[in-house]
Image (cartoon, rainbow, N blue to C red; front, side):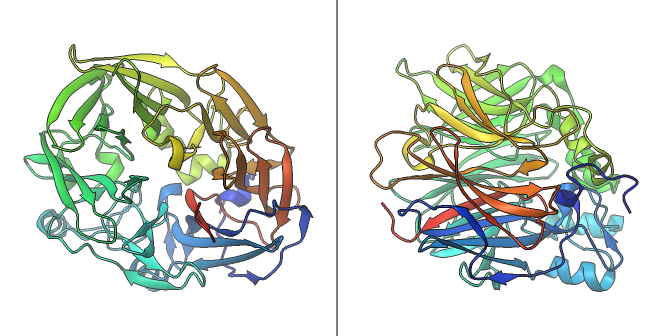
Length: 475
């Protein structure tokens, strides 16, 4: 039970209902070109039976779909039918490693897990297309396939290679021309290593591009991909793998913040897999890369939604989160310019307004120079994510959208077909309306952040993480 309610409490409250509605009440008008499905992923249940998770990131997965066709918006949500959900409901405990929720495994089971890891299938973080199937992803290499129309869980979709990883990014990066996916993973051992891989389009086979030995692996949620490089951003939140076996603590609680290490950017040649440089910059932490690219002078620019330290992880435990925030709930847009010859990384701040859950026009600008990033922001302490932000990274200026008692989720950018300008399109964001006790799908003009339409749901939705828009007609 929550000791007190904060304005956004419904965003961190379990939602047990599953809804099917062909047409939501709609205010305003959808653009006539906006036809497709917005898929969203994130926690749906924080408690079920005797199971209680401790951290926002451990909430049990729930899928959502918003169907935008013929000027109408339909909605459906389904809890992802996984082994983890079944265990939580019937046993009150889970077997796979949670992010910050204790799985109560014995030392013997932890030792066995090093060779044969028991990986969670609570894939509650992201959505991607792999080998022609929609899949849910988390930070373990166990994609879960689902039907994008019905949201029916199809089950695990294992990779067809033999590579064993303990951790894998929930944010694979797609090459907009080939359709190949790129990613990285970590194998924990006495001699650990990072592995970078490519998944050729239409396959589920990870082809290893590069390996890098590491004694104390860093916690990295995402990475950077440019036209010619792969970049791992090693934040100074690191772990001695033996500690995960001995202490029995939940995964993330084994990591230590060592700012004296700085942030180490490991730069690889994307085609050959050659390790080109280690560039060291000031310490920071980030969940999400915004973008990265090679500028006209050939320098590498890596943009992050960055925090000065990793304390944000502590603040996202459910107990403090439900009490209310006392500090800003988002990072700042930082750019690191990497000098691969000197091995250093120089930081600049790209704007006055902070942001989190960043999105860009990925098809046009991913891995290339760009101008605009959209994200959630926070301008009232204690209010969590209470605004949407559009940041012009070239000029350092910004636009915002906010309304009383409105708490937005990740803004997904959808370009207008045939558009020539980078921001010609709309933003789709799920808004928690705390006063009304429900949620909306909000459609904003991406140029101006003016409202085009909103569709009202019959239920409030917990705060989600990431999603994807699947247009009916590509172009």
